[in-house]
Length: 334
Image 1: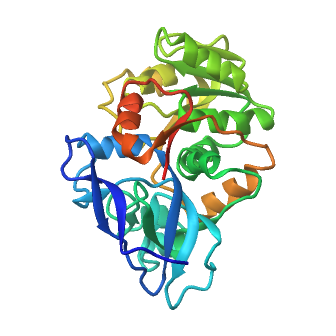
Image 2: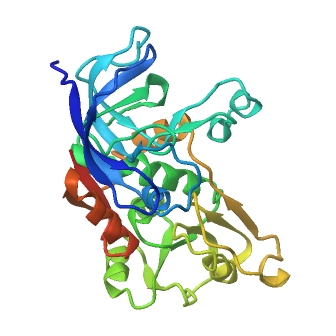
C-alpha cells in the first residue's frame, strides 16, 4: 500500500480553542503497532470534554478521536494479529502495562499506566493513526465503516455500563438519550427488558427517537417513570441526574454513571440511597468488553443512527453535540 509522507488532521492546540486543520507527518508504527488508514471516526462526548478543558492534561498538540474504523496500511515487525488490508477498530483504551495489580487481576481498564486514544495518544480525526495491536479489534461484517464507528465507544462503554447494572433487571431507565443510549436500548429490548428513556425537558424529538428504538416510555428527566426502575444508566454528564435516578429506582436497584466526566453531584438525603440501592461508575473498557459487544452487535442486530460530517467539519460536529442537536451519533468521514 502506498503510504504518503504527509496527511490532513484536525488538531487541538489548546483546550478552549477550536480544532485546526493541519498537514502533519504520517505516523510510523512501532514494533507492536499497526498503521491504520482511517475511513471513519466517531465524535464522542469525551472528545468534547477534552476540547472544553474538562479532562485535565491531554497530550498537546493532540489529534482527537477514539472511535476509529479503518484498514491496516502497515504493520510493525512484531505484529501478528492483523494483516495489511484488514479492517480494524481502535477504541479509547489504547495501551496498558499488563504488569500493575489492576492488569494482573483482569481490570486493565484501571491500569495505573494506561494510555488513551485521542487523549494521551493521537487519535482518528486524521487520515492515518497508529495503534497497539493488542488494543485493536477485528470488526463484524455486515456494517459499513460509518455505522461501525459509534460501536467503538458509545457501544463499548454503553455495554460495560449496561452489564454493571447487574442481573435480574426488567425495568431499565436511561438518562441522556444519545449515542450510547440508542445502542444499548436495542440490546436491552432484545433481552426482554422494558426501557424508560429520559431526555432534556421539552426534547420531543429525542423522546420520539427513543420510542423508535424500543423504549416503552420516554419523558423528561424531571419526570418519574410510570413504574419504579430496577436499574438506571446515566449517560448525560449532569450530576443532578443521579438524584433523579435514585428517586426513580426501586429498592435494591443500581444506578450506573457511564460517563468519564460529570458535573458535581448535589448533596442528597440518605433516604434516596437507603434500602440497598447502589451507585457506581464506569471507567474505560476492557478488551473482553470489546470482544463480547462486537460479537453481540450483529446478533441483536444493533443498528446505528448516525449523522455524517466531513473531517474539516469536526468543529461543527462537536458544537452540535455540545448543544444537544444530534440524533444518534456524529461520525467524521475521512
